Amino acid sequence: MRSMPLAVTPGEPAGIGAEITLKAWKSGRTGLFFLLDDPNRVAERAKLAGLNIPLKTINCPSEAKECFPNALPILPHYFPVKCAPGKPSTDNALSIVKAIDIAVKFIDQGFAYGVVTNPIQKYTLRESGFKYAGHTEYLANLAGGEIMPVMLLISSELRVVPVTIHEPISRIADLVTTDLVVKVCLITAKSLQEDFGIHNPKIWIAGLNPHAGENGTIGLEEKISIAPAIKVLQKQGLDVSGPYPADSMFHKAARDNYDVAICMYHDQALIPLKTLDFWGGVNMTAGLPFVRTSPDHGTALDLAGTGKANPESLINAICLAREISISRHQFT
Image 1 (tube, one colour):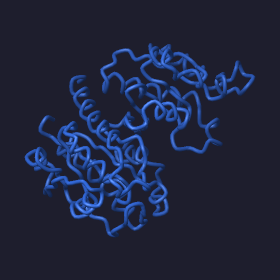
Image 2 (cartoon, rainbow, N blue to C red):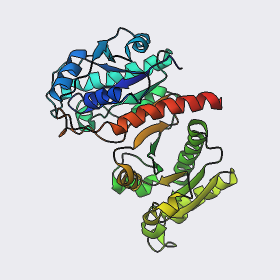
Image 3 (cartoon, rainbow, N blue to C red):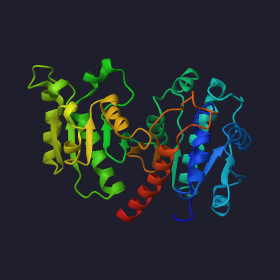
């Protein structure tokens, strides 16, 4: 694995993916990776953003190692439409998705040890017929079988998991079932053990309703679905407790008591994480047979081409992917 590179996908070409990838390489903090993208497009974006960074076109992932110390390796991947920064085109949707397919294929073939995905513009893909809610669900499909993806978000201050991911808030109460909470927690615990070296992870589970339902007076989901899941998990030997009121789970004294917070929906998990460390957060997909991480932010169309995009989340995503790969190797 030491000589094997990490694949980085371009994401939405109208977004900040190319710029933060250029800055990530320039940081010198990431370890070996290559970018799947159009070398001419990346060069144009670098010039527009005022980034004087050497680029090197490669023919296969194995060539990345030799040139990486002196230039950003780019394995050519082209888009049918040249789009201006901040102005996505649905005509590029299939090529955006194809880059993800190629990166995963490189992993399967032993040419890359993992993938870091730059942000995609979900509405652009959906307008072109993409049927998945996002990267997480699509990567689970590529993994095949009965894979259940779990979104695990990591920052310097906190780890969080949303039980439901990209779902309308009106559906959450029906989707949060005992079975789902149990499955998400088991996958999360396994990831913390194998990917982070935490032998017996401490897991806190949030309630769905204000005050965690206040003993049934502000909703029954805690009694009907969440508390029974906790009992099942405890019987299986996991260090799980809750349900806790979400509004009191994320201050410093509370965070010191757990390794991960299991939340019931997307914003319940992401608001505290992004508030504590907006630029440093990383999104990883637990439950996959391969390593996948991503910056914990969107395409930032308003910043594309300005040179102002902060690369810290991508840098952390690349570094975390390598750490997870090493941890998995040591675990086995």
